[in-house]
Length: 521
Image (cartoon, rainbow, N blue to C red; front, side, top):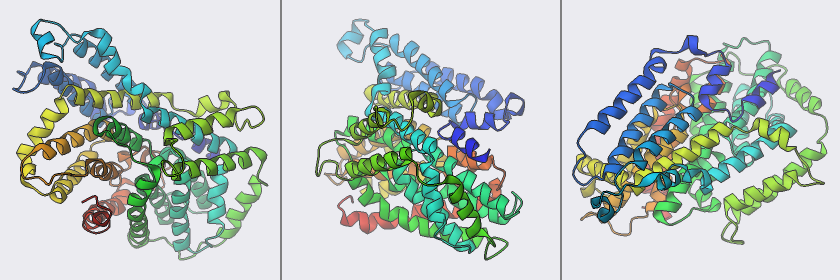
């Protein structure tokens, strides 16, 4: 039963996960109950303000929608897919009736019109990032459907031994390996949770034991860390890459991302290991019967079946395509992933059927991604993001600072903002366009170093978007694990706060050392 639960939950949006765990309407918090009225009031208040000098009316309306989105995402008044449809409706109504973006046409009384408004609202659904996220969901579905993800995890755990510290290290390593093959954080954690719960049950330990909390917290935080280390490990990375490609005119290959991010993720994994062992010590130093439990689970899986072998071959070939992108061949990450998914359905291969796959893909999450990208693009095209960025630059005095100081301030800003969100996708959709606008504004300001590497610095800021360590509700995988009742919010914070602080310090250290050597700073 636990295995089915993990597979079913994989890729499900956080609000739907909470509802599935019993968090129905009767358990809604005050903020959830009044989140929608509050969001509407904030939207109307911003709309009724006079349009500031230098801001287009359409940009003014997009800022109102941004404020609405932030409130509704923070309060979780509705599910994320529903929030996406509400945001889309607001964009259609406000942009369709807004004065044209062209000054001459606007002076003549022309509006943007609903034709262009529809394009602006739904353009994100066809963005490369959204397509890659969709393909990644199918790949994750294939992993859970065949059980290959579970086999990989159990194979690693079978090698670590029964000592508690080695099991923790094994769980972190499982998160690292699966990040290459399962491009969905929730799917990865959904795969690992049944294994952890099985280990706990086999040792006759209570769910609320320190050992349970230790394993679960290490698993969740390791997943977040390797969202940073691997480009295709997290869907929110695709949101940022979409903005980078569209607004900065450049892309980031899988290998370049890995070279920049993987060493940082490795160091963070080591930090996580020692913090977990120190701050959440288990009741025992060795788990009696641990090897036998893992071996029994492996035996239950039986020998590797044909679908698993085919999926492993395709996954390894896909990984090779990602690594050699733009060095050996010109095929993009998105294109190679779509081709790999197509192969899975081909006659003679048939790793899974479409009926099996569609039940495991969170279509609502895709809608959220698409609309989130559309909102960010509209903030940029209406110049609202640039106006807000200039305000931030002036307020914080960024124009007179060096690039390193700007990065340090913006990274800290994103960490603080993330505390209010339960979705890294929401953070990326709303904040990365503003970060790009800030960097563009700085590049035009006097006294700032010319030739600033905006693409790579935006990538580094995207790393911070995965800093959902402090509270379980700061990430979908955190909510999924929290529902197992194996750890408390206090347990999560006990490790999450130090991980966040050390992670931020390491960002600055890497910026002055390794990333400086790579030419980013």
